[in-house]
Image 1 (cartoon, rainbow, N blue to C red):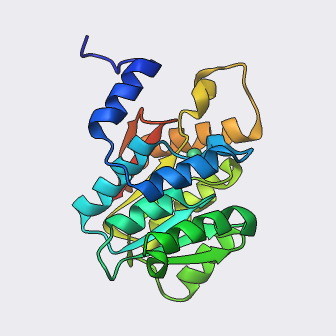
Image 2 (cartoon, rainbow, N blue to C red):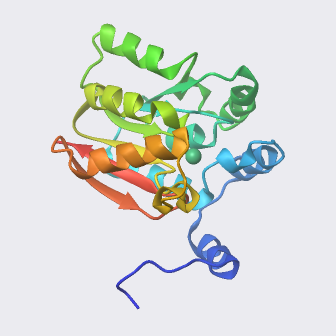
Length: 220
Ligand code: CA
């Protein structure tokens, strides 16, 4: 039974969380507040957050980018894992959603580590490249509108240093990527990027069946 990934039913995911997720009251509070939002499914799972925090620690990351901040959970877990001088450049278009994050970042004492840039992320990333920040970043997390995933991926590869990692969320898209009958802009955009990364010689990559699917790409 080790040749494929387990199906995680509710009982097993509860068990996994009970023995592995190191929660804090602020993380739990932010998840609870986000769960009340109508777009609550956009939040990453606690075990995915913990995995990203571990990854950032393992890499000794300092400069990180997030594309798609929503209510700020992933920015919070990454900021908490970063050293004192670490930074998250957090890109989002919503003042309303990110204001929820801002309150919790302040409460957790990490607001100074998170540089929120409101506006279209591709423009923000272009401005960073224009400002000479290419190859300066250690880690990037892409979790925003799917149609622009490829644009975000290309810009992140420019901004990452050699050995830096870009993590791309929702690559399994609730299974729709594997359903030949589904053709909408989002699903097709994710499929196209998945196929591109599979043969992209610029990166070493691995697709993980965590959450809704997470691909890690290490820039060569
Ligand atoms: Ca997501």
